[in-house]
Image (cartoon, rainbow, N blue to C red; front, top):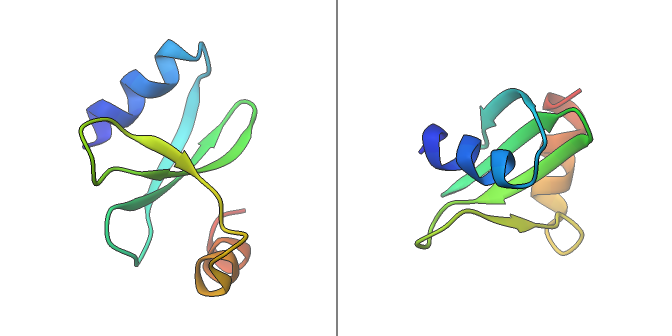
Length: 66
């Protein structure tokens, strides 16, 4: 899964600092040169998601990804 995430960011010409598995199914936090992104890997290709509609995920990011 990490390889798919790295390839996703290489396509965006963004370098990854760290990939952190979230305690939610198929969700990873990615620290990149442009900031922190949440990635869902449940489909064929990783996709960016938001934590705005998920207060538990938002709280986890706040407490664990800085």
